Length: 246
Image 1 (cartoon, rainbow, N blue to C red):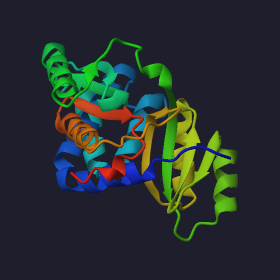
Image 2: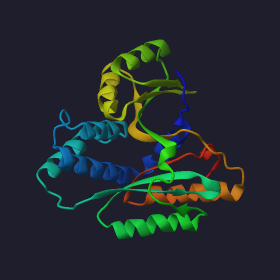
Image 3: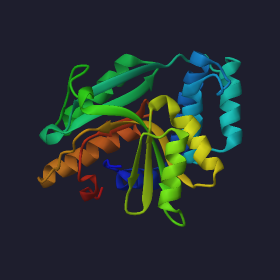
Image 4: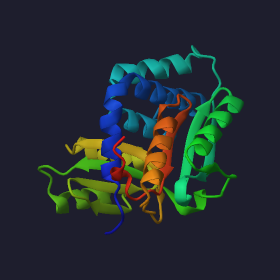
């Protein structure tokens, strides 16, 4: 099976955010709280919550933290109402960017996102301007060490995966968005080491930046998005993100 895995980008992001665990936990906690309010506290009947729990566990959020957030949201212990808003736009040289947010103040968040685009040589576009370039898929990244590729492929496909990609040091299992949590649980139960699990927007094509200023500005833009408390995830089609040293 084929595809394009961006594990190097995910790995770098995970390494970076290991030093910002409180921020990561807070953002995932916000996602869990919203999912509980929308679909209830039982992941068996709330597929969105199940997916976010899988994401939280892959990000090493302790089980007790997850349980506490779910109970608090179910009991309406936090009355803050968050709104999910996706912003779309272009980075330097037309890099497609999608910014997923959860905010309690859409004016503040829109102003921040627009500022980041403008400051680093991009521009915020209208809804739909780049989203057609992405496909929403579940993405489960599994450590390659000690894993039999054929066995994992068989297990993944039997669990319902739709694609399987062997990268340099990981396996990338793709799923339908609604199946990610269940397939993640199935593979974890079989003993595979899950490095990352999320429902992501995967670009159909990638663009390489060659200009050093564009590389620097695109990297800085992504850092600004990721450091913003309202921004949950950023997806883009920048091919050579590893060229940015920060």
